[in-house]
Structures are given as C-alpha cells and as structure tokens.
Length: 107
Image 1: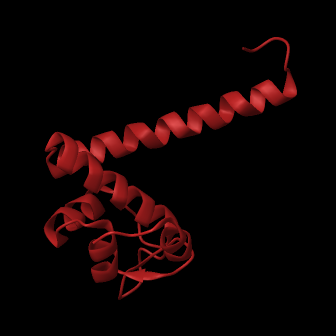
Image 2: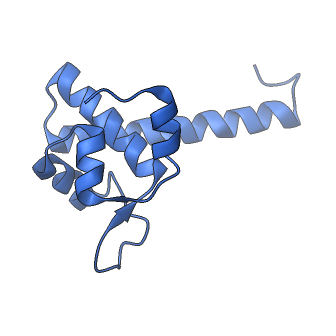
Image 3: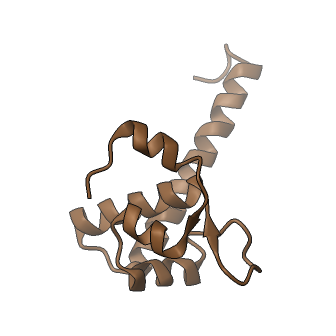
C-alpha cells in the first residue's frame, strides 16, 4: 500500500484500531503483537478493552516496517532499535533545549 504525505498527516491525527495500524504500517499482525508486548508500540489507553492507536504508534510501526524490510530484523530486534531511536530523539531534544538556554557554551 502506497501512502502519500498528505494521507500520512491525516492518518497521524486519527485514532486507529489494531487492524488499521497493521494495514497502514505494512506490518503483519504477529509482528505488531510482539512489538505491543515488548512495549515498543503503545496504545492510547493500554487498559481499554479494545486497543486504539494514535500518531506516535503509527510512526513507530512504519519505522519498524521499514527496518524489517531493509534489514530483515526480527520483532525483538525491532523493539530494541525502536527504543534506541526514541532515546536518541529524547537526547536531541534535551540538547536543543540546552542550546537555547546557553547558545554560546554548547555546540
């Protein structure tokens, strides 16, 4: 399934079911289930009877699908890589915040 940029923007603002998440991300349900079990992808309300997902879950699932296709990673490896990518984003945000507060001392 090919998804255009405008569709991605629209999709990231929607609430998706587990099946829709699998379809839009291009992941088999079994892989998505393992990513959910590992905590690499999180539903909006984990305690709900029926799971629903937002933009962050869709982005993570699409990244997982690309990594799986490009590097033939197993679900456990995908979970580790997704966790590392999330940590890198957090560190980049912290560094940017430090640069804003002290622009001359941090490069």
